[in-house]
Each structure stands twice: as C-alpha cells, then as structure tokens.
Amino acid sequence: MIAEKEFSKNSKNVVIETEVVVATPNGKKKFRVADLAVYRLLNNLLEYLKIVQVGKSDKNGKPVKREQEAIDDIEAHTNLKVTFVDYQSKKIKP
Image (cartoon, rainbow, N blue to C red; front, side, top):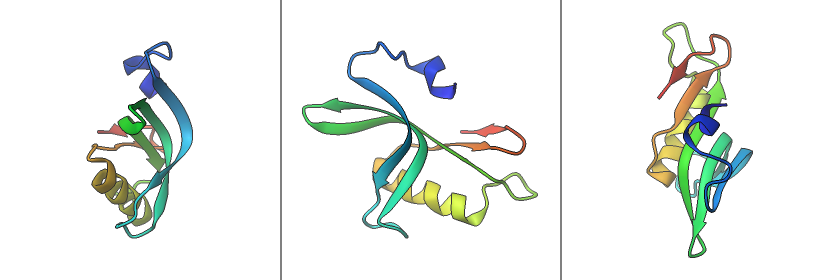
C-alpha cells in the first residue's frame, strides 16, 4: 500500500484509514471523501500527513473533472499535495 511504505502503523499517533471524510467548507462541496488518508492527532488537532485520491484519468492522463475538483478542495483545506492514482492504468501522480 502506498502509505504503508512511508508510514508505519506502529508510528506514534499515526492513523492510516480509507474513505476518510475531509471537511472542505469553502470548496465546491462542504466535504470530500479521501480514498486514503494518513493523519495524526496532536493536542486535539488533526494533522494530515498524506492523502491519496483514486479515480479515472482523461486521455491526457489528468484526473477527470470530478476527481480534480475533489483534489482541489482537499488540497485547499489541508495545504497538502494530494497523490492521485489512476485506477485504470495504476499510475501514481504526486
């Protein structure tokens, strides 16, 4: 798994989960569901360490519109670059 190579499940306070709801109050939608998220709680504050979005790409290899909008919303809220994985070609785009 992508995140397990970077983060150990035994790391202190680190959580690796699928289907994580990310609040995006100023985005196109009020929340998004990240396909995979790595995060930790520090002093009751949520800190995202990695977010992966899995979806379909267009013929140029870029995420289709709905995936790109989700990525944009998540990145704007978390200040974290989302890793995109095209489920058809299995190519990872950081």
